[in-house]
Length: 338
Image (cartoon, rainbow, N blue to C red; front, side, top):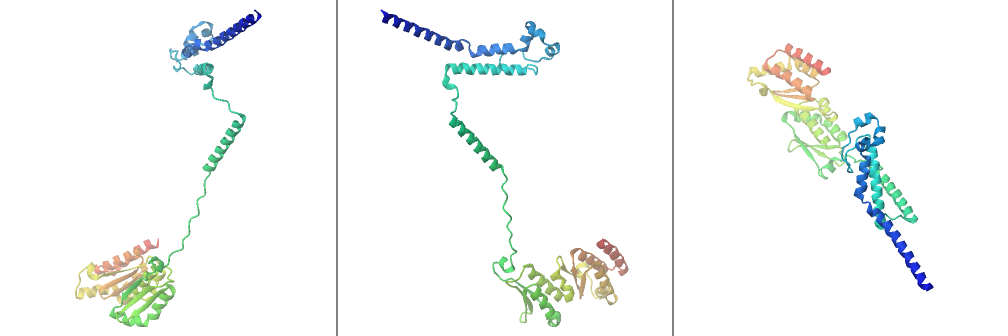
């Protein structure tokens, strides 16, 4: 009998424990989430609170008049700046209650609390990621620009030798013999270019060497020899080797005006003047050198200076007096000096 009574007591204790557990499980299910949201929004609504009892009377009239809250009570409805904070608090309360209810129903939904070893690992991983981000954001210095030495003449042409050939007119053959050393010295020593006279073809040949510093030296030497063949003096032609932006321009009198016989000879006389006075005046004012070889005219100088000298020579060919040309040259020379 005593054994049966003990068993009955045990069964009753089990039943009471099951009833308590069922009550705890049923309490969060009885109040649904939607009911909690509606009740919270209803409580947070300013119009409901303003119109109900002493709480509404406690508010100031200015706040109630300026309230622009929506009359709806569902969560997410518009709230004015006076009641926005209260609505946010209500949403937080609803969310916290919903999460607690879900956790009571299924405890597996809650995030697992990390073990102390896992916490240390997470902290170390966060620090390493921060270090990686910092190292990636640091500016990497750019490499230094490479410095290349200028190529020599034979290197630019892939080791091929470059030539220039300048023909010698018959009237300049004898002056070339007399002034050969004066031509040979600056070309060979200064420009580092080989030069020779081909007697069969009657041409001056120029050739680059392995120690030629620049390719332009070959063209400068060719211009220097060509200027001497046109009739310029060696001291004037040497300027082509030592200075840049110097050119030689040539034109004929018939290019400006077709003249024949005595008219052509008078035009040549106007260009040179008495004892070369007009030619020297144009040269000194425009800083150029002029050679009048029969009907051809050669001008050596800079581009702008050649343009001024050519315009004055053309006006003389057209028949304008020398005095008028001198007055124009004075004005132009003053502009060039400025």
